[in-house]
Amino acid sequence: MFQSAARLGRVKPSPTVALAGKVAELAAQGRDVLSLVAGEPDFDTPDHIKQAAKEAIDRGDTKYTAVDGTPALRRAIAGKFERENGLAYAPDEIIVGSGGKQVVYNALMASLSAGDEVVIPAPYWVSYPEIVLLAEGTPVIVPCAADSGFRLDPRALEAAITARTRWLILNSPANPSGAAYTRDELAALAEVLMRHPQVWILTDDIYEHLAYGGLRFATIAAVEPRLRERTLTMNGVSKTYCMTGWRIGYAGGPKPLIRAMSAIQSHSTTNAASISQAAAVAALEGPQDFIAGHVAAFERRRDKVVAGLNAVAGLTCRRPEGAFYVFPSCAALLGRRAPDGRLVATDEDFALYLLDAAGVGLVHGSAFGCPGHVRLSYAAADAKLDRALERIAAACAALA
Ligand code: PLP
Image (tube, rainbow, N blue to C red; front, side):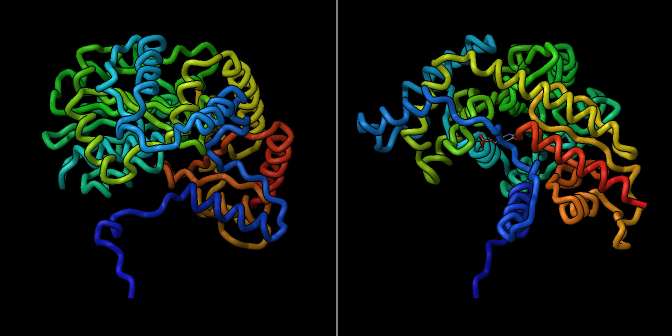
C-alpha cells in the first residue's frame, strides 16, 4: 500500500487549483459554468515573446542552463531591478526559478528549520503557509481587516514578531485582496523591521505592474535600503507578460541566500526551461507599451465588478488598488437558506451555492485565511463578467 511522507500530512493541496478542477469537471459535463477562479491574465502572450522562444529553439538553446539562470536573463533581470525599482543586484545576487512559486519554495526550504516562524498577513496567497509547513516552519498568521484595507498594521507586525521569527512575507499588490501598500505604508513597516534584525523579508512583487488609479508601486528594499541585506525581492513574468505557462520567476537578494536557494534548485529542477528563459529576456527587454493597454482593461473591469457587486444586497466590496481580484464580503448573507432549503452557513457554502445554483466559480475566502469573503478574478472577458454579475445578483436575491 502506498504511504505518503509524514511531511505531506502537514499540508493541504491548493484549494484554488482544486476549485479550478471542479469547475472544469462541471464544464466537461456540459454545464454552463462561468469560472472566475483563475489567477492568470486572459490576454495571450505577446507575439515578440513567442517569437523569441521560437528563435531560441532554432538556435539550439535547448540544453541545460546554469542553475541560477542564463547570464542573459540574469542581466535582463538586473536591468529591470535597476530601471524599475532603483535596486542594484549583481547577476550573482539573482536566481531564476520555474515560476515565482518555486522561488518562494526554494527560499523557505533553504532557510527554515523546525519551529522557525514566518509572519504571514491574511488574507494571503494560499501557497505561503503551505510551503512554510512543508519546510517545517510555523506560519504566524496576522489577520488584516477589510476596514484597514487588508493591509498589515505596523503594531500588529510588532506584536507578531518573536525571537523565532525568520521571515515576514509581503505581497503587494496582493492576491486575493488586490490591496497594495504605498511607499509611506512600507516605510512604517520598515521602521518596525529595523528593530528586529533577525527578521528577513520576502516581498512577492509579482503583481507589480497591475496597479490602478495612479498608485505608484513601491518595494521595501528600495523604500528602506538598510533592509536590502535581509530582503528577497521576488518577481516574475507570469502576470505582467501573460506568461503563466512558461514558468519563469526570479528574485534578487543577498548572495548567501541566493547560493542556498541555488543548492535546493540544483537537486530538484536544475534550471528553468531554457526556451522560457530566452522568452523572458525578450519580455523584460522588449517593448513594454502593451502593458498599459492591459492595465487599462483591468482597471475598467475592476470598476465594473466592484460596482456590480456593491449593487447586490448582502455583498460589500472594497475597491482594490491592484492585481486582478476583488475580495467582497459575503458575511451578511451567511445563515440564509437557498431555494432548495440548504443552509449557506460559511463562505465555502456560499461559493459552492454560487457554483451549483448560478454556475459561477469563485474561491471562498477561508482558503486565503479570511472567512466571510470570496475571491473573484476579473481577468476575464467583459461579456463573461457581465453575465456572472447578473447570475450572482439573482442567486443572492434568492437566498432567504
Ligand atoms: N505569488 C502570488 C501572490 C501569486 O498570486 C502567484 C500566482 O498565482 C504566484 C506568486 C506564482 O506565480 P508563478 O509561479 O506563475 O510565477
